[in-house]
Image (cartoon, rainbow, N blue to C red):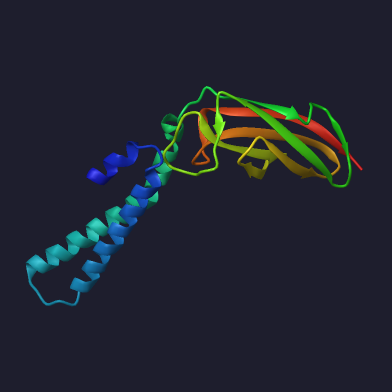
Length: 181
């Protein structure tokens, strides 16, 4: 099947799965339409064939994302970029309840761009900021701010491709800081 051959294009999996779902739905509609038509053996075989094709398309559309998920890392672009957190400094103490923490990053060998696309360019992407494992910002620049309640926190920054997926290998920087009331 020609459509399945295009799954080798990074990011094409969801489009192929959607296409298979739509194709399966259309074929099921045709089989349903034919159920009321009088006919002989040829029409009966046609209906069975249409229901079989519809079922196969719908099953493939459902299963394909799970099958492709295991090979996602192989299809991800690589980059030579490096990311460093300049602010806050490791172990830095902030005061407030909550405290506003200014985040400054340095990206070497990469470029932060504002657009989102499925056309992946190795050294272009976005920055994702995580506080204690939760995504708190998707920035279009290297300066941002996060809000943190009193306690010890881990800040992680990741340079991701323009489709918001990770590079392979991932481009990460992390550190911990504290907030006191």
